[in-house]
Image (cartoon, rainbow, N blue to C red; front, side, top):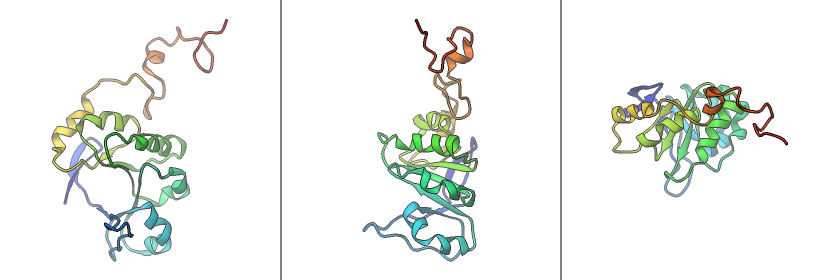
Length: 181
């Protein structure tokens, strides 16, 4: 089994992630076991997937709207968000939406081009599990979660930005924090 970083620990991954075929076709589904399926497979075989033994997870690509699974979030043991390449940051927004707007509290996993240098920011957006790209050392990557002591901007865990936490009275009491003349 592969190793993942989850809840600030390194452990084995009990989930099997089903990938589309080289031709883009949907993968076949094993009879039992814990699986993470692409959104397209979930949409096509929802009833069959729910009837099989084992836990179920779904994964989204950056262009897929998390609103499409909002009503089904309670059915998933994990929601994975794919980062096909480092420069594709849409998954950060997907994570924020899943946590803040849709209230997802389960395992939120970053998959794809995931490595140590991005773990702190991924965690700030709500990810609590990380499937690292091949060749990454999970123990070294785990240390990346402690690279910074705080975040300037608001996060899923701390909505107020740093300046509002440090200087709460110096900020005008307007919705956007700007002074009015």
